Length: 207
Image (cartoon, rainbow, N blue to C red; front, side, top):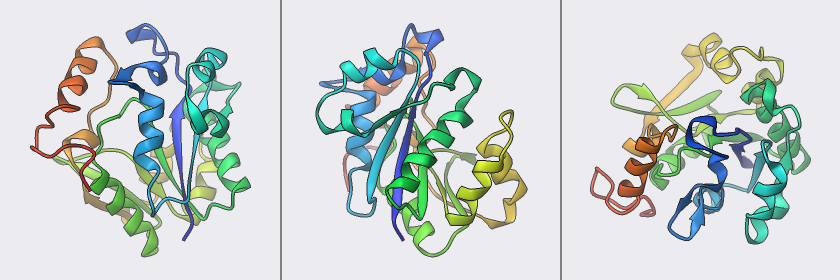
């Protein structure tokens, strides 16, 4: 199965003062880090979806990441429009299944990604990681689920697809980072600490 990761990075980051795609962990922006996390043997390709301050985000993104970004002009209408833009780009590179990952979750551990991809490879309609009883990221969507996303409502988005097919969603073990998003400066300080010393004692980059 050809799995393509879609990094959702179109938001304006109002509560944190600018696009989260440009927040930094060390020498990397969140967007660059996400591309590195998903550049792995079991993921065929990675595309990013930008929107708010798109020119600035693209201009401050280095290397090959820049050429794999698509602009969502409808970003103000909600995250699902970015999902749609990403699905279009994934279709153009022959994706069978997709991973959806918000750029503001930069410390998900690689083994978590691997478990989601493995579940898709076994034929899961959808697969999500969980930690402490709560669903995290990235979410994996197989061929049928991918088509269902294209029909989802703007109000509920991917949650609608998962809720309507709850019995077909595979839950795989996650890690604390799969749940740790960045919405505020306090959240940002948490992931800065975790990028050095994750709470489970293993570095996010470990295989």
